[in-house]
Image (cartoon, rainbow over the protein chains, first blue to last red):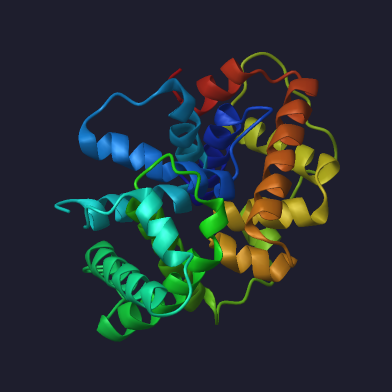
Length: 76
Length: 203
């Protein structure tokens, strides 16, 4: 696929995930600790935390920070 | 990391004098260990960087204590804050000498001069032309700059600095842009299913 095609496919994916109300990066930071605790404990993710997952679909930086957070916490 | 409860952490960090100093030193150690693991094998994150960013992150955590909602372990929240501080610094360093002149042109390409006529099933080039046209007509210059930056991988911290916005305001600007773009595509007769078909994105 041409570079333009890749960029616009990424934009298309963002648009398909876009909702009228979304969690911002700051809101995400407030909630990601609880989400990470659930993941590390192998617990089901509560419905109230689904927006944390959805935000990471739209925000590669928060997704990158989440992967790093799990690395930081594993084995503790 | 530690068996201390959230309430104990908050009580100790909220005190004055030597008790708080001991707790702050323990917090710093928790963050240093966490960042060391999070940044292991990360280019640009050597021991000196981890040391520096641990200091900054400790201050940031202490500054944001009132934002801790108690829904996670305190240390999980604190390490999450520290990871954000560290990655913001790394991203800034990576992009500090990169010019963003011409970002919109290179990131989004030229918009068609006239509305794009669409008939029946769209080809990818036609869809991209419509998206470019809607961005040109419906989005502000700042929104186009932001979208182009995001699609080109420019970090949010860099976009915040160039646009003079904090991260929340940047996210809102981008969210508004995406909503306008969706609305504009719909007004041009393009549905979510059309977008999925053209880019082969599963439901």
